[in-house]
Image (cartoon, rainbow, N blue to C red):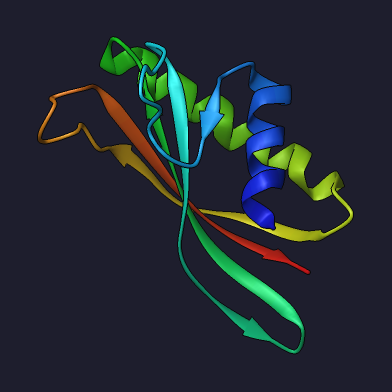
Length: 112
């Protein structure tokens, strides 16, 4: 399950708490990992992953997003089941309902 690998990478490489859904009592700074699509071709998954970085201030969310990008791009390829990590985009994605500062990075991850 690629989500577990991503959560571990984010937490171990950045120290940012990472979850697959918003916890009941979230910390001020966290990342939410969500698989939003993907394909399977010749036994290789191409998962589209959204990673949302929350922080008290927008600049902090942007910096955390950058840390997560670096961790996933340069560290996840060392995992046995990961073939390639490609950053699709990264942008301000402030939560419309809560007005919480948030940045979002979209990745395509090729994995077994």
